Length: 347
Image (cartoon, rainbow, N blue to C red; front, side, top):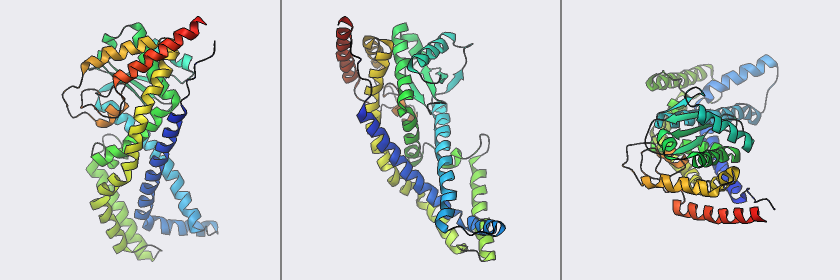
């Protein structure tokens, strides 16, 4: 019996395109940050060069700052988005003691899929849904108590395998990154919150950043360092504060478009991979049919970013998004896959 193909090349292309768009926007954000902190970097770079007895070309100096800053920004996006999505649905990470059966299922299915066992979080809500967020080595799979109560064993395995397929395909990582900047542009997330330790008020962080920028500009202007114009630093800072949100929204538009296309295709790919992993496309089709009876619930201000990550588009109580394929189309594809799968088993 020939193996059924599970790799979707169109999904890979959409992931690459979406990640490229995220990297471009992130690079622009880091470049703006570099310009804002330039009054600090210029004298520090000069002092470091004098201490080492060398003078690095400007391009090398900017790369030495930019590449680590870009990597750190991506890491912050992953960590912050995961934190915010869990908070948005009131999900709590649970251990084997609280949910032994759920942990046993995830561990078994992760071993079958050859992926690292993700953290497991449970949202106490009757709204039945699930999603995966984070990277391949630090992913978190979130399920609601409503989902756990409404599915039988085979259907629950199929849904969990679907979420693990998102992790294995790495589209969970790309979608986690892709939801950050659009959410910031919509006002759902805050760049200041993303770089602020938990428990520290955002206002304190804002004042600290202003103090750093202003102090750097004053120090550079006083020492006559290159780029040390106080007026220039003040104008650039005010411009970013006043128009940064609008510019970010425009810059994030390609990320939104490509992210929505990826969100559409990745559900079909995860449906297929999850169904084949448990050997029962019918089980996943049954789960989708059972959970889709919720329809579109009343909006309660839940994050649109969370809804875009979920198994079904209604999220955990918010308005449904248009990023998902219709449940009817997904079930129809699973029916065709089931027919093909059963036919190959009989061969």
